Image 1 (tube, rainbow, N blue to C red):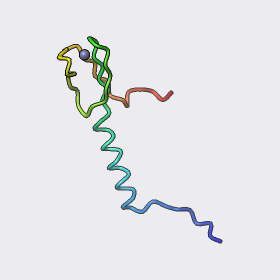
Image 2 (tube, rainbow, N blue to C red):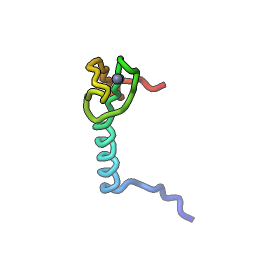
Image 3 (cartoon, rainbow, N blue to C red):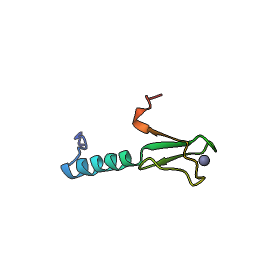
Image 4 (cartoon, rainbow, N blue to C red):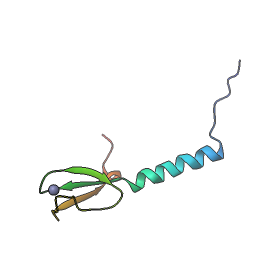
Length: 65
Ligand SMILES: [Zn+2]
């Protein structure tokens, strides 16, 4: 019987932080006001419909819930 808790190794911690940073880079919610299309991108970008009326919202700005 062992009651040792699994712990993160420094390597696992590093990988976890990297995956968080990765998610951060793809966390911009884009919303096209012209066609009402929504998508997530790594940077503010225009939709292929060509409309310049696109809203860019960083996902981390959304409160939980
Ligand atoms: Zn559009």
